[in-house]
Length: 94
Image (cartoon, rainbow, N blue to C red):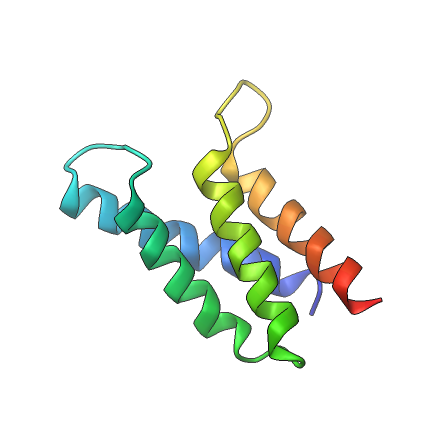
């Protein structure tokens, strides 16, 4: 689950974020409504993790990673979301 859930956060959450941003802002901008949509999506996915609070912490980490990752030549949020959320969930699971 530690590999699958962060990838689901990235896949589903980032897709919802992109849809919300294109409808609300009409352009690619890291606004708050996209982050709210991603958080809701990731919290729904985190519901299937026991204990739930570990999944919720991973979901929140995924949203923060998505919002504050600067896209460079080698790093974008498709890399930072699963790595950051997996790291947090692994540390909390110990």
